Structures are given as C-alpha cells and as structure tokens.
Length: 129
Length: 306
Ligand SMILES: [Zn+2]
Ligand SMILES: [Zn+2]
Image (tube, rainbow over all chains, first blue to last red; front, side, top):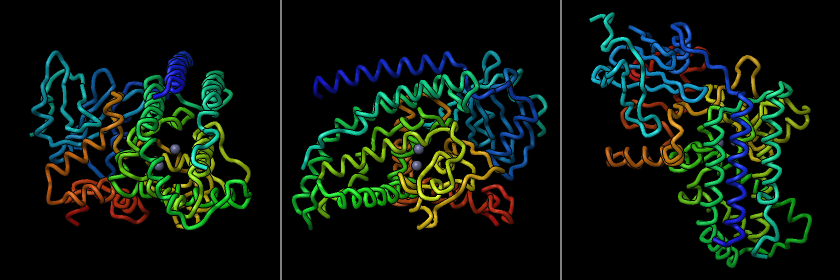
C-alpha cells in the first residue's frame, strides 16, 4: 500500500467519524416505540405470513417478543431502529437460559447470534400444555 | 492504455462526504425525507472504507488478469474515439446488469453482494455499504469479456467508476420521482428503492446500473407502487452490528451448509439464496409465489406438505 493511499485512507476514516457523529447529532432514526401486543403481532405477521400464533409474550422492556407457533418459536428482536426475526424449534426456546429476568435465546445464526428478552418468568406461566 | 489517468470514485469521494452531511442536515430540519440510525450508518460507512482496502489488496490480481486477456484481444479499440466511449458505456452497463443479476440469483455471488443490502435503511450512506469480498468469487471475470473485445483496461476501469458514482445518488428517499422520460430510461432513486426492498413483490427486481432499459428488456423491471411502501433490508435481517459478522455472515453460513450437507454442496453453493435440500428455507421465487394474489396462504411447512 502506497503512502498516498494510506493518507487517503486516514482522511476517509476521519470523514467516517465525522459523518457518524453528524448522524448521532441529527437523531433522525425511525421512530421505534416499545412493542405492545398488537404491534408485535403485526410485525410477526409481516415476517411469517400465514403462521398462526398459539401464544405471544412481549418482552417487558418492549424491545423483543417471542411467539409459539406449532413446534416453532418465532423470535423478534430490535436491532437499532429496526427489527430482526428468526424461527427456531420450540424446544430450543424452552431450553434457553433464564437468569435475572433475562432470557438469552440462541438463534443459531451467524447473522443473528442471540436474542435477549426480558420476561417476568420462563417458561411462561400461561403456557397451554 | 493500461493505467487509467484518473479514478472517478476517488474524485467523487469529497462529493460523497458533503452530500451525506447535506442529506442528514436537510432531514434534521424536516426539509427532506431521510432516516439515519447511528450504528447502521457506522456499519455502512465502515463497510465502504474496508472495501477500498480490499480493492487495493485484490486490485493487482484483477488488473493482471484484465491485462492478460487484453493482450489476446480481438480488436484494437481506440480510447480516443467517441464511438468507443458510447460502446463501452452500453456494454459495461449490460455487463453490470448480468453481474448484478447473478449476484442475487446464485448464492456463491450473493455471499458478497448481500453486504450492500443488509441495512434496513435507504440513504446515501447505504450506497457506500460495499462488500469486502467482491474479488474472491470471481465476478470480475464478466468484465474480462470487454477486455477480450479490445476495450483498453483503463477505459473499462473508468467506465466502472462512472457507473459506481452514478449509482451513488440514487440511494435516497429524498427524491420521490424524476421526470417520466428519465424514469423510463435511467435507473433512479425510485427504481433502486424497489431493488433494496424486502417486500415480496419487489424481491429480485431492478438490477440496473445506469440504464433501467435492461430490466425492461429482460423482464426484471418492477415499478415502485404507492400502495406498497418499501421495507428495506434482507428477507432475514441482521440482528447484529458486529462488523465481522456483517461482512462475512453469508460466507460462513454457506460454508456451514456445505460442511453439514456435503452431498448437497452444489445446491448450497450454486443454488439461489434460500435454497435448501429439505425445503425448510425459502428462495425469493417461493416467497413471491406465496405472496402472489390468489396463492394459498400457507406457512412454509404446510406449503411443502400441500
Ligand atoms: Zn443488489
Ligand atoms: Zn444499492
């Protein structure tokens, strides 16, 4: 790599810092109010069209949700001002570690390693057998 | 001529920086439509910065291949003739269309191109979200055809740069529609918003670089619909901003599939993104078919059984 390229790279790195700072200052992200039941259902319907939900649990901090749909768990988690969703076997969700009110769900995906959801209890007390 | 006398992308870099600031400031005061999320912006810009480093590391090999092919060229095309520039403009843009189309239709190329699509935002910083691994899967070979025809390597490099710079300004929600004649011929913010959208109707559409004509010609054109606002990102969005995961997730996922199912390796490498040997995943074609009017509204597993 030539000194000219390294200089240009350093300049670009400074510019990246300035642009990120400008974006942070502007506060023009998408509005992302905490999830409620209806909003979680709407997002899940868009992500998993045609799936019926046997149960839905919205995280108490409103930044995630977990639904049961047959043998699957549908997981929704906030990423920045957007959302990511994955489906995993229900048994995997049941086996997830639950500590201090936080359920850490392994999503088994390089692009979505885990979701951390705040719940009052896990497994959920209102889970139909 | 072998070495280009100038690089359009380097020349345009100050313009990139100033226009991103302009878009943010205009949106901040409500004068333009744009959404910027800090971590997402950082990820996009760092992908852009990393891609320039990757370009330098792999540039030598790509240039050597181009030069070697050019030394076996069919015709001598002069860099000074106007017709030659018109020809390289059209042929490079056609090459780009097919490069872009296979980048979406075959996983071995999608593993790199996915990087450009993994933001849930659509703003000028998204344009700079470029792959680090573009040279690894050999898609540059498509441009070797131009060198073989006889276009000087410098001419091809300049035209590629012009195309990249053209495609920068269309990554914006601030411009709704351009005049009708322009929308008919050129790739525009509206057409490219469709390309970045994850709505079923918009998947795998509008591969154009500069001229949208190719999509109209080859049947991949989709207009932006008022009743279907674009939702940006991937069919399965990233749940992390970790830059290494952002850059390499699909390579790792592909390698994992090959290791787990060696008998189906060909399908996992050369099949379309979302292909699986047991039908447990969905390709764009499956998603589009399921969402089409009149389709059975079934979940994937039920659709398999049906
Ligand atoms: Zn694309
Ligand atoms: Zn784009």
